[in-house]
Image (tube, rainbow, N blue to C red):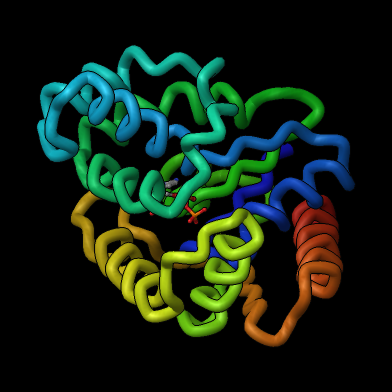
Length: 213
Ligand code: CDP
């Protein structure tokens, strides 16, 4: 059983993915961490982020055991990730790991930008989680404040979200877009509990429909 959850930054997709995975007893992969880790490794080794050769080499050699590195969680790591994520060979190098993870039993939830469209086009259920850019920026801003970051302003957070949306939707390879058969979940007016309930309800309906056909 494969559940694909895509959507833009701070839409709530990561939290929803974890809770959905817990609910069904499935494995969960935040695929953004793969791109964040590649960007970290490229920068640490002293290369520029748009250095294709270096980015591809680090993507091919990525050590999944380093994905729980807290340094990957910050806003800057997300911005850097979207630079290496534009490189088609980097995306290709990360495909096998994601697809193998998706096959794990009894099931897997993967969240990202291209799970329903490219990584797992045959997923059993697909969600595209979104919210207005202002609401997403507000969530990210509060999250940064709660982690002790007092220096980043709301406008800076909003600008960074808009820039990342543009990079992720505008890239030629595997752009962020809603799969034809994805269920759209707009969390603008929903708190996390309501968003989770809506996600589980939609997934159960979809799986029920597939089983009936
Ligand atoms: O948590 P947040 O939505 O802010 O970011 P993330 O999911 O960790 O993704 C960071 C960046 O990695 C995104 O802006 C994308 O550029 C890239 N990414 C991607 O291209 N494809 C994925 N499946 C996941 C992330």
